[in-house]
Length: 303
Image 1: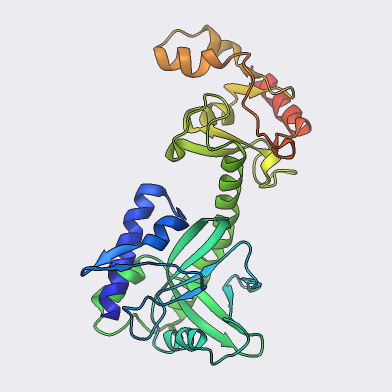
Image 2 (image 1 turned 90 degrees about the vertical axis):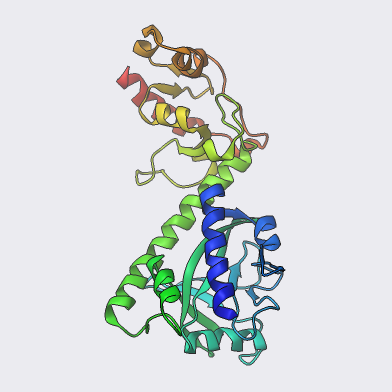
């Protein structure tokens, strides 16, 4: 039963990520899926969650943005996950310890903004430190799910050197993805989940565009270094076809204004010229004029 439920949960999550992306609303995760006539939620108010249908091992672990536990990363890049409470023998802590001993794959949800979670699976408990009340968690690749499905008892042993190296590399990349997804969600929330240029509201078609690119000085993933843009306007902004002045007015590059093409060019790009972008209601979330000025200078140089 445990094995079949776990495989069904992985498959259902894959479907949800294909629909919504890898940041999923808590409402969807709490509702879960139907398995042999029973509803299986994937999260609960407790961070370590075992649905009633499973006899022994937890199904998922969750980190929240406003929780009481100081989860993070090891210097090597593996995830740290705090015990439930301070009792190492609390049943939920024992459940995770048993999952480690039997190499059971779990699902990890990390809150990037309240109510939305980055989903990672399969993850494995690879360390247990009762002195610091902390488990160490490694993320594996999706091929590990297939190996788990194909194996008769459990996933391959985690002591193999190539497995350890692979998991360390994959888990280290999760930290960067958390920053990226958190930036996107915070920016879209500030702009009321619509494009600042054209007001498009389909989340699947929205991005958080950096004013100063990530990796450059002052290119921090903070809201006032971002603008919510649809994919068309994000691409045009990145390629300096469109610029934003420090007074929040849009300018379209001169050669683009002179082109003649179909309605997408006319209405999607040329029609934006000299319009003002939609701004967040919270003034602290609005684009930093100094950053816009630096970006605008580059736009003018591209004209």
